Length: 296
Length: 264
Image (cartoon, rainbow over all chains, first blue to last red; front, side):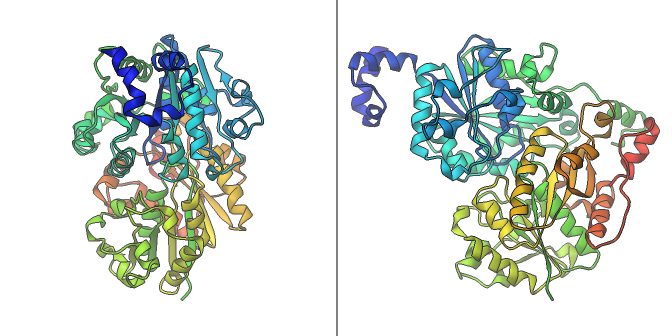
């Protein structure tokens, strides 16, 4: 049954043939090993796209998968910083697309997790310099060599966003419990259309504020978005620290956020684990607040 | 009357551009200035939500540009501020390329003839939407958080503003004094040094901002919000008053608590 589907695929959807090699034997082999291309996006900026891309990449690679991360934020790249690889970036996506270097030379290998690679964005170029077709072809090529191609989308829904989603057929949309973020994500999910299968990560939940009715709950967020939930992440200050240091929390066995990212990675890989839920230890000021009669 | 035309921008998203635009606008309006806020984030508008006027939008910026309504018809007045505060909403279902830089500058200039301040809320990034947002501005406020990624993006944006000859000042947002003290967060001085920018304001991190934003209440209208006083200070600095900055992150616990209460 599985074999039949693969054999029939080029007939049912002729656009597949564009990227498939000429020999039919190769087509079948490629179809089996072709990696997954997942775009991490949100519409709104600053909700945690880059942090999520970096940590899921680290967590998937630590599970033994071959992973490549593409920074699609031409002109405002940050994925290299979050991974701590900024001093090792020599070439970027546009160097590859414009033929100044090979794809192999442009990939930066992570030292901590050797099956993780980064393809950095150009910092001194414009997003309009990237052709959508070229980006699509690049992702297709990488899917032949890697199990996962994770694409870190820029904020917004302009050219950079369009290029970022071009080669993906899955999306992880990151949303924070804010009305503005929910509205932007809703718009983005609409733009992803039926071709791209979207799943949700809710980031920066503070359970104490949710309990007090001062923050939207995950249920509130997903009552509007209605997406399959991959997981929930708490608002933890160690994420800011790890970003500034270039050490993703997914590498930290002691970090609750790191554990949540590892659980989400397991879910992406198809393991039957529960979606992580945010929990936060009661902060000092919360305790102080309840001591003085729960004013906060 | 010719208004000051100020764009609020950052490069990185989610650092507080829209919150800053809304609250500075509200603080200026409370001080008796006539203020128009322009949402330049076509397709992903949010300024209307932060001010709680989303249900009262009839026309938008793109419809003004396309001549389908008068500029005055598209302005949504925030009734809590009498005649002082209005917003020109962005279109939600159009692309940023629906408006050219020239058309955007034209709208801003027309608004400048009818008020004291035009504050332009830029979208994240440095694409067409950003170029539109800075097209009509004569000054810029760059919002940055004490994170390496936000600083790198702000640096890139400051370069673009300098190319245009736009004078700029910096607001450092979401500072956590306790993390600065333990060396886990960059200090305001560090951020200003790296960006070699003149400081306009320091805003501490306050999780309750999310709640007021979700409810559409500007912080300056909520007496329970300590950040309201901080935006008022920034508004006064914008008007040319000299107000010293509070040093964050020194002293013992009570000193820090005290400083956090009167920061800005």
